Image 1: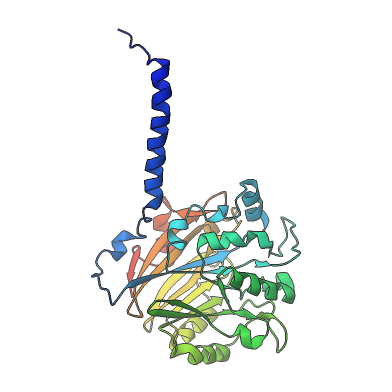
Image 2: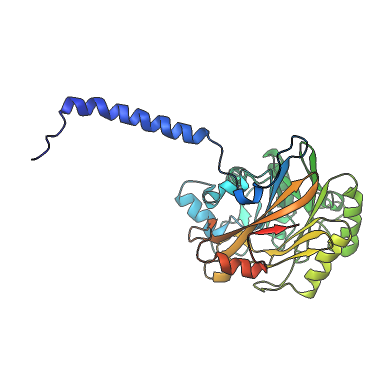
Length: 351
């Protein structure tokens, strides 16, 4: 027996009711907190009003020029590259990355150019992503010139993002970015071994390279903060292991008093090392980059460091892969391979 269709007038009544119920459901979901990142990694922390657990997320190279910008423009969304992983960076207490492309008032927009330059209209992408602090010390700092460095410093700070590793002069370039979250204070310093535009006494650029500078900078801030993070743009491109200079400088930074070393520049992941009470990420690889021609450069990770009482507690490793829209997203099939590249057995590392 065939079922008779609903009368037309009943359909007219039910349709708006169903639409209203759907809207209420979506509104309810939107008001809920995002799921806790790495819930297993938080579960065994005993609740305490005095000792809150903070999350510090470390990401690698962020390059928003060339094809990354083109796709964002096609999607009509400046923040398109970050949309698949906002649950991680936008909800972190502190999120850090290396900004491989700086801003310029009149950028060169050639899509195939090795000079990475951003338009001011792209700034909201970094805000949506939730980055709190960005290193500007890398081999592409020179792409925007000294005026571009000063321009980048201004607009990032106006957007509520703290730059580190660059300044209008050498003194400012060596000043740490200080991030405060209630009872936690973290200092960020950044250096480029693959240097391109070192600041001068009266000229903008990135920090000067050398172990002496690093030791002096760490010593100057060590007693004023809970934790010191040192960003090192250093190493051999596409090398799966750190070279001797990377090891020397990274371990030297920890010996000087740093708690974390966040490395980048090789564009691929390199191992994590626990050294002298500190955490060394020799290379965090790419986070957003248009290197789809290189499989290894598309397999990456973000490291979420849990902090309690001003001390490192645990690192949660989030394996990621960069898709063909240049978006980092949770890795599935390649997750085991990514952990192997990092030299760890699982996604949780006690510190």
